[in-house]
Image (tube, rainbow over the protein chains, first blue to last red):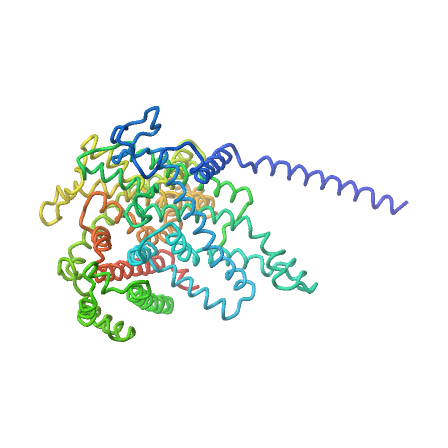
Length: 308
Length: 315
């Protein structure tokens, strides 16, 4: 009798609590929506990627060779949807082929940075010790080095420049930054109880890193990597604008903008508004989408600000 | 405080040494040798040997580094292969343009970001705040090489509000036309800084305004204006100041872009044209000077930091 009297209210209280928790979770879930903008941006990134990958299968004009039957610096028309440039080339097909450069350098560079910076970061933050101190100081010193200036110097001596070289160099320069982010994220989980529990159960270090820590820091890595992709695309674009990225006639958004602005400033006595507006819009929309997706994902996974 | 500065200074020296080694060895680590690069199609075995001897390239690398460093410390950065101008004089002529661009753009950026952030933080999530927040988020996706050609197209080519390219006038020659030519590139550079400063200051102001000491000040009956200026602004401007050093060093990339676009003979313009002419001593010299300048700027901002918030030095 007494046991019933004791358990009943407790059960009731427990049920109440549970109900409350469920309600809380429900409001949390409604609060945490990715939103329409996220999906528009994600679809846009995928669309640009799909176009870039299938570019050679699509019925596009040749991006590197012009057709002299078209107008020079022509505006949008039914044959050339986005107009032509000063060398009678189709701007739309140059934009689509140019997306390849931005995407390869952006995502490739981020992957190289993750491999070179992320893996050592997890190990070093998990094991600590002298190696961690050295790597940590090293990354500080490396980050103090102005990346763009170093990139310009390297690119200028390592000729000829192609997409893969640029990707590799930018990836190596991105590694210290990714090291810092992944290290901070790993540190915040390395001393948690579930890691200790796994250790007590006799799990190996590689198992703990891969199965216990990695899934927890994945959201941080994904959202910061997207920011890294955007930053790398900007870096490549800046190099291209300075005429130091992939060599012409290979199109990239940066060198199209450069060509457009060279015409703009009257270098050849012509102007072509379209050669400025379309590459600029393409670049803006891709960077904006990457920023939105990264920002929404960060809010969605509730990545708290990590002390870097 | 003294210990903090000593520590930063030690790091500064290590970084500058690292930068000098990197700038020097960059040329040697990469495929191809300087002599053939300089000579181009004239690279016969005899010419290569002459150049190597002339530049001391036949000595061991470490010895070359110390010879080079010895010259650098005496202010000798070698001379251009194409114009035979000394690298030091090239830098002395072009550096003021970058400094002027950076100063103007920072004045514009602070003049706009401060009032904007203070106004937005007063009523968070209301119309002005949301509008400026959205606009600045979008502007994060507008790097200088995208926005510069568009603004030149609108303001210089179409409306002729600002002079077009290649119209740079030195400050010493004509003050007003210099300012006029500097305005458009400074605005381009300022845009990027405004975004960063606004977002950081707004966020920090909003969280500061919820602190107890602000409630205290309010209950004492202080005016909103006084609370904002005297109580909230200083503790909120730390992360913004911290970013100013980084922002200014990324501005260097921006100045390169606008200089190239508007054909202003600043450091970026000189660097890119010497890269295109394979003028490696000039590239080496400018790389070194720009890198050291950026490292110094970061050091100065670290120091400013401790003045605004002395707690940082005590950590």
